[in-house]
Image (spheres, rainbow, N blue to C red):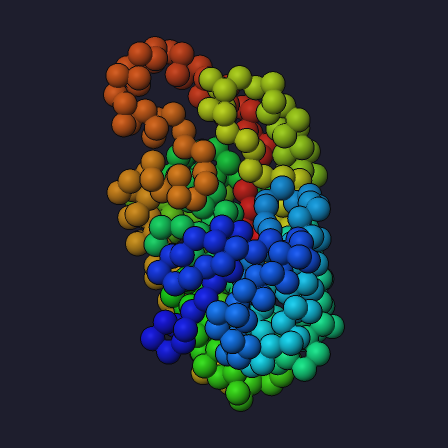
Length: 373
């Protein structure tokens, strides 16, 4: 956006990154007030758009005080502090997961019930309510984004699915839901295009717009599995077996309880990713009706996850260690040891096989999850 706008940032770390970035702490009234007073002194009171990206996120599924203090109350503090500015737009990127899911073959639109299934989208839905309640005269736009990815990084569930197939992990052959379900994806370039179009059209958009942003269709879990197996290993069909939800949830719970006592020599220090709350959502399907995005923003996704998969897999295969690090996935020993052949040779083949077999049994009941949940 720098070609058309003067960009000023706010973050916990006030370090310039090609444009000025001022320090702010959204959990403190005084910090928010000081940051905006400093802004007014330096740049004046007229603002084209505030794009409020700051939020807390984790994938435990458990509530965290930061969801309330950052995502919800932080949004409230910011909006109240902005009331004295000549602000043309408050843009809040939310998530499609605030909506109740649909079934394969259906699409959700902006009228779909708000019914988030776990802590993070619940906090975003609550923050959306804050935007509607606190914006007063400020025009607002809520963009409900699909799961964002690019060639090197992606939402955690998709990264985990790719890693499982790449490693030939037993979990990659097990799933606790309908394998036809999938989740709309959103390439980072398409997300940035949607943000830019939203800011550019601020004068003509409704004053309280809510818009879904993502690919219209969702790649089903089974199709995604087969595509990954073919691209990674030349396998035309990646066997995926359905496992009853109670058994999957029990296995996930048990693995989480056992992880602290499982030696790192067996599990590589990897904390189990799948949690019982994810098993419940294994049947959630998110395909999007994007007619409002087309009408209001003249926007639709130019990328398709199905077409981009070869580039995603190529990036993983080109530098597995870097890919695992970039996506926050714990790399198995045979990947990290590839950069240190002496370390790999010091381990006896029989020991490695025994450890691998033990960990496969420990993982047996840990079931996969559709990307994007």
